[in-house]
Picture 1 (cartoon, helix red, strand yellow):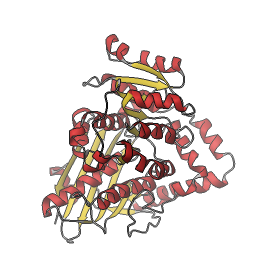
Picture 2 (cartoon, helix red, strand yellow):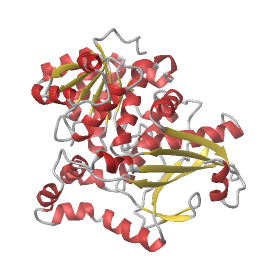
Picture 3 (cartoon, rainbow, N blue to C red):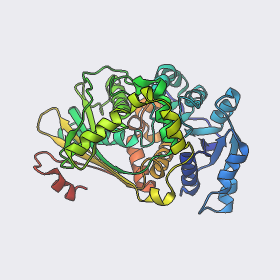
Length: 428
């Protein structure tokens, strides 16, 4: 059982404030209405200080209240100091497989602290599970990787769709299938590209296979690469996406943790997860899927692809703030109950680029949930371990995302609806 966390100097320490996404998180935390006690950390003190000095729309007093720490993934002593100084550590330094993602998480687990990161690298998450889950349970630490667009919206959308089924049918109801359709308008940064390229040496992580790689429970679903899926909640066809392989594993970790714990929120033993990104037509879905599914092959067989791609989009670069403000994300998640009749729909929508501007909100509110919402922790979170957004304090996180992050999450019973797009005019 996790004890009440000891007093720390800071509510949140942001490790990686000098990076592209890290600087967005730094700005979000500095402007936050709750004014949490924050420190920025990195291996170059001058660059970290410069991030603090570049903050906008905050008072000089607020700027000066933000601490500065030096830490490096290659310096274990500095990571221990970082972990001990914070109630929660946010790690935005990727690629996580190359730049010490595991080492930072381990330092927090050893200290009995709390941790969130942005990894979409299944191989890194798998190592966290294998080497840190039991350690975190012993120390009371709560480790929550993948708390950005990879894969918080998909995990929470699935959770709330399933819970809506239980609200309609009763707590013992189970779900056989969840289908997530999503539409995204956004751009790519050099860091995201670098993380994809970093998995060149871990092709297994990129493959749409082994859905239960991160789960403590083995299920029944066998994954087969697809070129399109029909999405009735959009009345359109959807494609495979760069997020699909990792999202699927993350959602199945939530499923497995809840099943193993016999939690009242458990989805059901026959649960299956599917997702697709909305496209304009079946042909467009086919072409998009083919392109994305060829990425592992290109990495392996096209000489110098990784170097050329990194030159086109160098790490540390990304879309302008104006471009990010034009972005958006809409997820519509259908849960099909085991009774064969009941269908419930959850919606998750946000204005702003979900991979950058709004990922700053996703991970910051995840961290603040860990720092401030212990009264709402699930039994799993009270015990500690390597968990997921949906298995820590999902209702508290949902409320924080709505209040501070500009995220709208809803759910409704849509059983018997002939046209889900018409239903969504009533339940957007």
